[in-house]
Length: 565
Image (cartoon, rainbow, N blue to C red):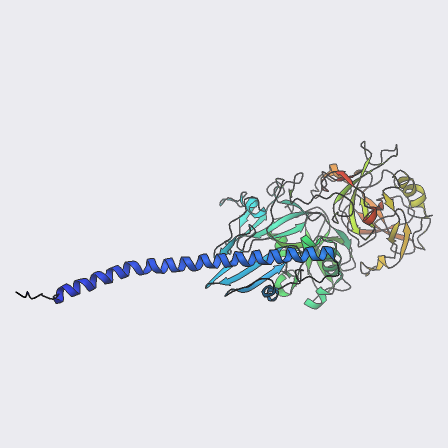
């Protein structure tokens, strides 16, 4: 007999629909998460594929270039994101940003599968707004170890920017922010944990010059000033390319002292402004080196602000010649040794093997055969690299010779190798350095009158085997702490040759028909009568290029100079 089947009731259908809806509500996010995870995985894989493709392509390009130097590579410092499609198939990805420093990718931002992937220094990618994992050996990581919320001196956090940290206080309170980097000793001013950047100032004055022909009252006037040209031409070009590629553009405040941001300029290298100096503390704080040195701000239409030898702020004419301390902003770096103290700076590994590969600013010990102990009991004279060319490096003694001397009989003419300072001191000193190390070179002997640019002293030259510092060159100022005052903190006196001989030394350059430009322990240039007896700081040229001299040891630092074989 046929049996009739009953259908679902409305209540049963509603129950099924509700159950299915609940299942859908539960399942949909899971499914969407799975889809999103797949997209992220695919995006990361695509980013890694692109990174690997660029690296492989550039390695191949470099090999071709090594075999044929006329080969035109794409992978140079001028490479940009538009070059990438020639190297690797991008698929659906796009390159938002790319920076290649000539050796490696320093910046790579890829858009893939609706996400942004940013290359981290570790070689991995951070997605969207994620921060890169911090390297435990990075400089910022090590500096952060000094921070405590209760700090009022030392490392403190900016009250308006939670990512910005800066230093304030005396040298006892700020004792662990010394960095040896690119041939120079720096102090950390501040760092930004979001941008991963660090702002630095040279601990030592790098030179002593007149800053401008007239006070700058506009951006254009500052940018054409002697001091800005020295920083962004002379100093910048002295840096190794690996250092240059890590320096970021910075906005420098070069307005009037009570409104420093009145005028700004974007540069690679600049000067400290008055507000930054004040922020670091009062007199005797860690930026006070008991030397005269220039700030980036004018006082009025006739004077530029500077730091006085006692640490006070003051103003002087642009015709005065005081110390120059460079300020730069760099990306975070990996530290290989050191604890950040004056005697044991934080360091980045950069050891070289011969004079052909040294960086400007590095230290070299040169054997000395004289019996006069001109360079101490070890008979090793410590020099510092001033400049490099194809076949030699110019180096300046890191201190003074033990004998003072008059400059010449008169200053009516430029110095020659027959003048008193040569016949009395320099010729005797160079005779005790083996000729296998040295070569002749050019020395700038032009007159440095009031109002001159730093380039003028180099406009007239002599050729000799030894000479004196030329005004405007690297380390032609008080970078050696003349007079060894116990209040000065910018050098370790143990690294200076004959630190107590005298409080000033001669340069190669006349100031007038009877006076010569001389560097004083106050950090400025003075103009001294030619027959007075003053300190002698020797400058020589060491062989390099095809005649490069091998180092037997050392790291090129003040406390561990390279040693010539």
